[in-house]
Amino acid sequence: MIDFGGVAILYAYHVQRINLRIRYEFESMQNILHNQYIQYQRSQEAIELINYKYHDLKHYTLALKMEENEQRRRDYLNQLEEELKGYGMQYKTGNKVLDVLLTSKNLSCAKKQIVMTCVVDGTLFDFMDNIDICSIFGNALDNAIECEEKLELEKRLIEVAAFSQKKFLIIRFENYYEGELEFSRGFPLTTKKETQFHGYGLKSLCYTVRKYGGETDISAHDNWFSLKILIPM
Image 1 (tube, rainbow, N blue to C red):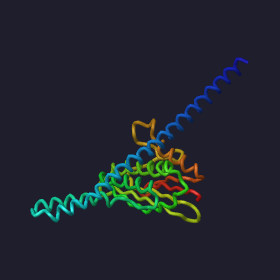
Image 2 (image 1 turned 60 degrees about the vertical axis):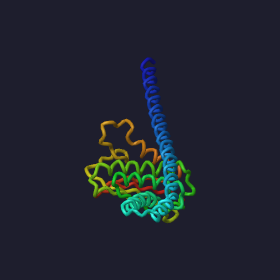
Image 3 (image 1 turned 30 degrees about the horizontal axis):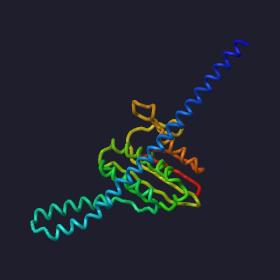
Image 4 (image 1 turned 45 degrees about the vertical axis):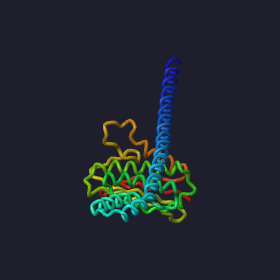
């Protein structure tokens, strides 16, 4: 009876540890989900500022017409060109949340000299909650940008695509990488010293995809890291 009691106590302790770990992982993923949505809201404010600036460009054109000094006119033109660059990076996918998120990430890529190409049909995401769109695209692109920052400038490339095929929504994120990647339980292992919080971004993404009955596939070959998502529509 004493032995049995000891085993029962150990088993109860083991179950408690598992429950605590599950709860910790769930809370971590929820925090990441919330943070991605906060990032989206801040990005929306930043893009609104770009739109205001674009609206003010008519004042630049007026100043150009009135300015007689050639050097000042040239300075106005250079400033005008910079303003147009920021506006030209905005996406028009058919989904306002994706437009803000992709534009924000593209601006971030531009600062880090990363080339990001997107072919995304935003109208396919009407059935999805905004916070879930932020979780999928935010986590995937944050991981890709973090990877590309470590590469030489000419190798920094991210490709994003979202389209429908046979009543399925297909989302694909691909980015160039160098070195060896090891996987454990379908997730890439980190090379960082701090491993406690690593991987929760991708886990949060997969959790979100499963909410819609979808599946996630992560692979790496020929120096291309690929994250593919399949969700029934």
